[in-house]
Amino acid sequence: MVREMTFHINGQVYKKILDPSMRFIDVLRDHFQLTGTKEGCSEGECGACSILMNGEAVASCLLLAGQAEGAKIETIEGIVESGEYDRLLSAFMEIGAVQCGFCTPGIIVALKALLDHNPTPSETEIKVAISGNLCRCTGYKKIVDAVEFASSHSQNSKEDFALKGNLESLKEKMFGEQLEVRHV
Amino acid sequence: MQRVEVYYKPSKLDDAVQLLSHHPGAKVLAGGTDLIIQLNEWTVSPACLIDIGAIPELTGIRENNDSVVIGSMTRFADIASNAMIRENFRALSEAAGQVAAPQVRNRATIGGNVANGAVAADSVPALMALGATAELVSVDGTRYVPISELMLDLNKTAIRENEILSGIVLPKTKRISAFQKIGRRKAQAISRICLAVSLEMDESIVTDVQVAVGAAGRTAYLCPSVSEVLEGKPLNESTIEKACQAVEKKVREVLGARSTATYKSLIASASLERALLSLKDGEIYG
Image (cartoon, rainbow over all chains, first blue to last red):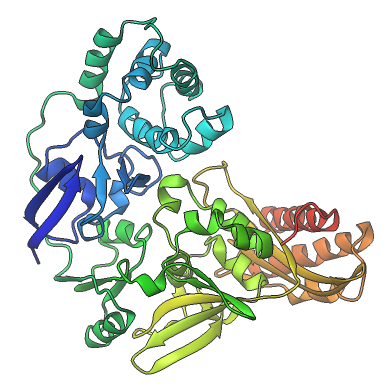
């Protein structure tokens, strides 16, 4: 049964007529065209669909629209657009923490949940934070390296890698071209 | 495609209980980390969902004179990070911190873990060993059932169709406890075995001990034969060895001719040894 629902996504309030028993990942991808959030395993094992709900990482494939209603939701699009994580995103590209890029949005989301309350995490803290995210390309080592690299440089220090070009190609990997809305 | 006909999100437990009594066959939605997978795969297709996630009285940890009550909607992330639980109910704290991964612990609830009745539910052996009781509320009133009697069979509990699991009652004792889990990897692992021990000592003599095993049989269970071996004796190399033999025998009996019997009985024994050694050395209290 559909009804009017209210969502707080990336700092904006939206109203949509939807079925509250839809999965929230389908709401994001099919009704908001926020396709940076990926669907991998559909059972909460891979972390590709991670989003932030009230500042905490959750799997959006294990969340219903009715559960997400009213909560403060942030997706990878909001995180990238904010510009606050450019250092981390660039480090991902520079250090080789991105290969196919499918897991990257979920990993960035999981890392934001960590870095927002712990800006200089230890290797173990980084590993625990991304323990719910699978990456089949990198072997994780380069991901941990990228986080350590990004957090060990202060925001004001002179950039030692090409920020802008890297970011554009990362966005292309994560968001691709706008997909047709999938019919459900 | 329409998944369910009606989705309720009551803000009071009384309302949730009324809704459940008026909608036989409705599914109660807690954190959803198990149920949503089942809905998505159409292995369950209820006409009605009752989301109990907006009921404040079901969330949080309350301390009474002789017990601690954990609301059924309390998330594993909150249990694992609670200092009082870590201090007094170490086995539960450890189990909560080892469930799946952060994304799941931020949603999954202790009530959902218990009510779902999954064979590898990590919190269940910890709750059994700690002597926990389930608080079940329905239009007929409230009743209390020990967790060790709640688990009937694979995915089957003694929770009635019109009942909502509202909380877990942990008796305050002087027990110390420990939890061990063996999976194929650290994060996101479905337990191959999970085992909890709680025990009470008088000087160096074990006066009371409970061992519970999960993921080795159709439900988790207590092992009274291990209690018999240890009670009235000190914890030393010889008594720990006998206890491990007893748990190995018990798991082997439960699993019978299943192909995993040899492996699981051996890792149950190894898990019990680790747990008892950690308690003996006094490294882990609570």
